[in-house]
Image 1 (tube, one colour):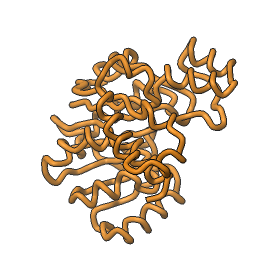
Image 2 (image 1 turned 135 degrees about the vertical axis):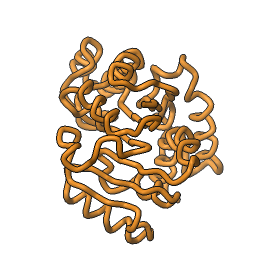
Image 3 (image 1 turned 135 degrees about the horizontal axis):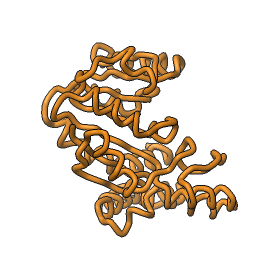
Image 4 (image 1 turned 120 degrees about the horizontal axis):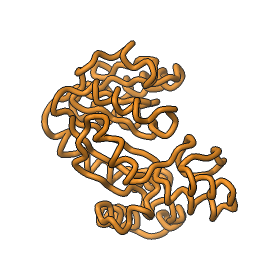
Length: 244
């Protein structure tokens, strides 16, 4: 496993751990919004679930198709071009048991409306897996990179210009308190909140190469602090599970 693969494993371990009880419930109809080339979708399909990926990029969907064929799950993955604003042009309401919305809410103009659409596509009792960039860590990351005006903009409003090299994508960063208001207003009950990438973005990749067992130790540490509220402000991302 390369250093980038080890770092990737450390960055996503908390999310996969949180999703495991949901995915173990049996074959599910899963919708992956903005799933791109299938980083999550292919692995979910390999677990026996049916996955619909909605993404605005035809190139990403083509790569998804190739990846699905190479992994032997092409019969369980369907890609559709679209986004949250046109979701119901390609997806039926109340058609998914699990919706993955990872790294997308940051880039939509109206997060409240987007969450209502995600709730509507879930069946009663269905689960939303929401992964978003977290504001407090983004402010610190921008300041440490010397982007002081961008850090100040995020500090004051939660929005600011995209900064090359900054963690996350898009212009909006969320706090736990903000999400605690947005999700219930959309008809979603939050059942778990996890801090993601509390340490993984800070550890030099060379350390994961040089120290035997460092990746697993980092994963163990990430999992140990994921639900501790005092570490949430340090997390690059917040992961929430919510029920309709």
